[in-house]
Length: 261
Image (cartoon, rainbow, N blue to C red):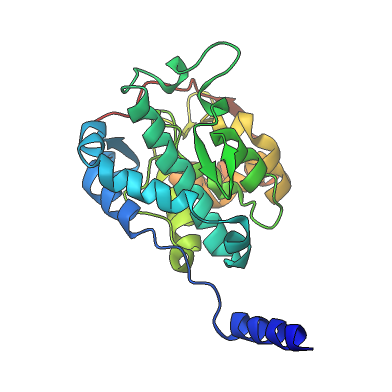
C-alpha cells in the first residue's frame, strides 16, 4: 500500500511539474558568435577556428546533450524533442570537424567503407550514436517527429548544405525557425532557382536524395515546392505546371567543400 501511494505521489508530481525543457543557450551563443551569414542570410559560413577557441563551452554543451537519458527525452514535448535532435546533430557535426582538424570536405573523414556519418563518436540518450542514426532513425524514422523541413535545418558542414542557422532551434520558436530556414534555402539562387531559358526548376540534390519525404508531405516534389514559388523565381504562368506536377525538375551538383569562413 505504502509503495502504491508513493508511486501515485510521484505520478502526480510529474503531471504538475513536467520535465524542464533542455537549455540550448550555450549552443545559441556559439552559433551567434561563430556563424557568419552570407548573401543576405541564404547561406552561412562557420568560423571553425573560433569554435575551437571556445572548445570548452562547446564540450560542456555536448556533455549536457549526452547526459539526457531516454526517459528524460520522452518527457520532452514533441517540439522540444525535435529541437533537441536537430541541435545535437549540428553541434556534433561541428565537433567532428574539429576532431578531424577541419578537413577540406566532411567526405574526407573516414574510409570508403565507413564515412563521417557512420562514426559512433558520441553518446545520445544513453547509447553510442552516429550522425546517420540521429537524422535517419531518430528523426526521419519517427513519424511523430518527421517534418520535411528538417532537411533545411540539419547541417552537414558543406557549402551545398542548407545554412547552419546562426541560432539554436528552440521548442517555442521551432515552426517559425524551420519555415524561415526553408525560405532562406529556397531563396538561394546558387542552389535553387527557376531557369527560364530551360523552362525548368533547378534545385539542390537534397530534393533528389530525399524526394520521398517531400512526396509524402505534399503528394509530389513539385507540389511541395509550389508554396515557395516566389522564392524560387517561378513566374505566375508556370505555377499551374507545378500544381499539375508537370514541370521539369533538374538537380544541381552538390558542393561538398567545408562551409568554412
